[in-house]
Amino acid sequence: MADAGARHWSAYREFWRLNFLTLMEYKVNFFIWLAFTIVYHGVALGAIWIMMSRFPSMNGWHWQQVFFLYALYMLGHTLNNTFFFTIGEVPDLVREGRFDRLLVRPLDPLFQVLSQPGQIWPDELVIALIVFILAQGAVHLQWSSSTVVLLVLATLGGAYIDFAIQLIIATLSFWVVRLDALRWVVMSLENDFTRYPLSIYNRAVRIMLAYVFPFAFMNYFPATVLLHKSAEVGYTFNPQLGWLTPVVGAVWFAAAYSFWRLGLNKYQGTGS
Amino acid sequence: MNLAPYAEFAKRAFSREATYRAEVFTRVGSVLLRVFLLSTLWTALYRNNGAKQGISLESMITYATLALLLDLIYGVNGAYVIRQKIREGSIAIDFMRPISVPLYVFADTVGQTGFALVQIVPALVLSFPLLGLMHAHVGGPSGGIAALGFVASVALGFLLNFLIDLIMATATFWTMEIFGIQIMVQFISSLLSGSLVPLYFFPNGLQKIAFALPFAGLYNAPLSIYIGKWQGRDIALGLGEQALWLALIWFAAMAFWRRGERRVVVQGG
Image 1 (spheres, each protein chain N blue to C red):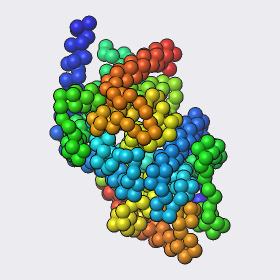
Image 2 (image 1 turned 180 degrees about the vertical axis):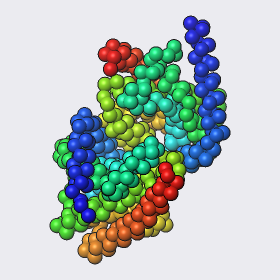
Image 3 (image 1 turned 120 degrees about the vertical axis):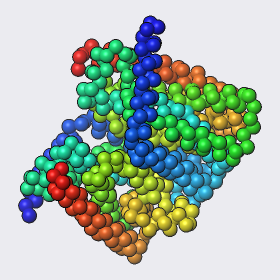
Image 4 (image 1 turned 90 degrees about the vertical axis):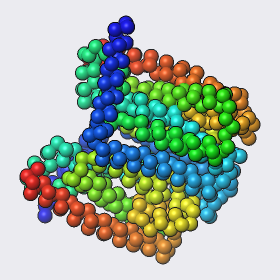
């Protein structure tokens, strides 16, 4: 067991070393992707700014707070992107038959999916930190030890929520060939609907974002704790709910991982 | 020039897409989910702030729903196959064939778009009861001329979209790393075309810039005609502007393509 752990650890270190060497080799590529990341989040923030300039009332949240909401989302999301990004390649691996290669090697298949050397750098995480520093200044966040603990838990839990949903979609590819449309809609649910406070939506959307695809735990619920939004117009929930993000992350990840094992067994069982 | 082979290419692309039946369900389902989500978003924003820029909530929901249906058409990126062909080198074989590669790719795109159009029908029909649940609905076009203008404008938008995709794919002749640039342009376009937020809601300065760019011809032009934001002379002017951009971009795309082609021929791939 300890042996398997050591084997995985050394493979993982090698993975990051290769990523770093790829970065040094393909510098232009790195800058293109860096520009892409900046444009991507710039467009999202631009859309929020445009909307807030025309529709300034978001159920009592002003633009600084909506900006903070996005920054908090970015932390968990980019942490997920940095460490678990390649999970999105599973449908391609399965379709093209390359997934079988992972099954004959003496390392865990999910681990192998997550450690395919490529063009992965923590640049997006760095951008997220910069945006967060600006956003916490804009809302005059009150720092205390509990603020730090909550932020760390929300970021880690948020990354696991994000990863769990991606893992479930990836697992579906063992049954369904083309998943682009589904991936696209979940991505849009995540990107477009975490931008505004959950309390502006109707009940069906709130339930979906809080308890089915729990993206609201990535930013909205922790933000209500951090910004002391204890009473939201037309939406009542326990004001300490934001502390539950790591629990939600753990539960959803456990469920997603069980589903993944199930899919893996089915895949190996039929030998397809 | 014999166009019969190209008609056949289009038909084949249509049949090829039609084999992915399961994807039709997920795609239509995803459009419906987005229709639902966006209409709740706009309803909430209007309830909190009232109507803006003379666009009623009903017009806004119509706008958002049609924009999602247009996504199905514009989402077909037929030119993307060029990137693969250049990467694998099979483009050299295509050059030896007695066909025009851009025209072949266009025919393929037409076929794929034909199949996308087929999916629009169930998506639209199913969105009626869905919006009905929220006491909202998709309004009809603001008149007969608006209906015709809308169809013409979507046709121009389709061509414009194809040429933009073609230009991006052509860049593969110089660099393999177009994927990042391509999605970058897509994201900028998603904002500046009015597909997410109508350009009328943009702050003044930015609005002027967005109206002047070709991206506005993709969503803003057809949808402005449909919801009656443009009428009479404005429709003619809007269509004229789309056509002008189309001519310019067509010219640029063809010139760019010829340079790329020459690169392969001269260097021998």
